[in-house]
Image 1 (cartoon, one colour):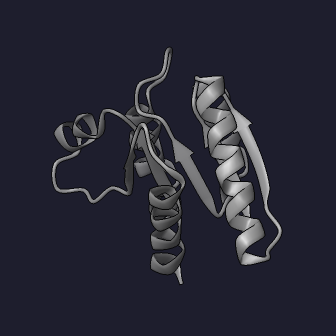
Image 2: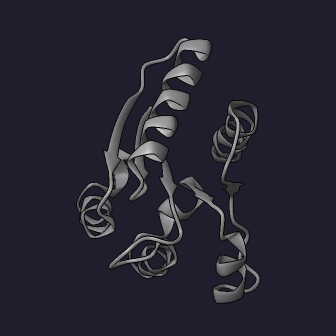
Image 3: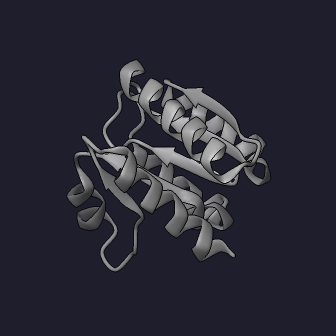
Length: 128
């Protein structure tokens, strides 16, 4: 499984990477995690390698380019990625206001491993 984790907070990046590593160990599969703190870099990464990622964690509020800006761009350019996104945020309402009627996979910060695991499994099952 290839994962892209996008969050400008290094502590959150570390937690997400640790949780994905733990999840992969529990499920006995290989995982590659690319962590990106710069949302502009993440947008370039997704544009260039959109089919490379099985799951994307995305913060909503980041400097320079927000997670919902990235989502809006992907909606137009790479809609096949939308069901792979797990928004890890404390501002899920921002998404619902900007994109009424869209269904989002959201895990609210701060989160524990159990809720993270449930959210990841829901995305994996949804895509199967």
